[in-house]
Image (tube, rainbow, N blue to C red):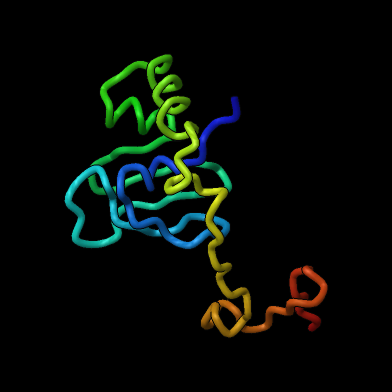
Length: 125
């Protein structure tokens, strides 16, 4: 069985997950009452971290933390709950919008970036 996505488990917990994208995406932690975005999720690495309460790890580590089970039981929980045909929480069944990669959307960091070649801009002095 393929490891379930971190987004799938966060949705199961009722978390408001950020849009799909690369790198760390800020979000409110679903493991404690959070008034601001103290947590982050990385869909590429399939991991979660909260800087407020200290919860971190992959989907199995989060299940072990939240459900109070060991690794074997966490895998069984994931197989039963996350991949049992629950289409309302199955992340592959949802389309998410992609974030803009225009240099103008990057603020001052986007100055001098080109979307054409994929290479870093070089300075010629």
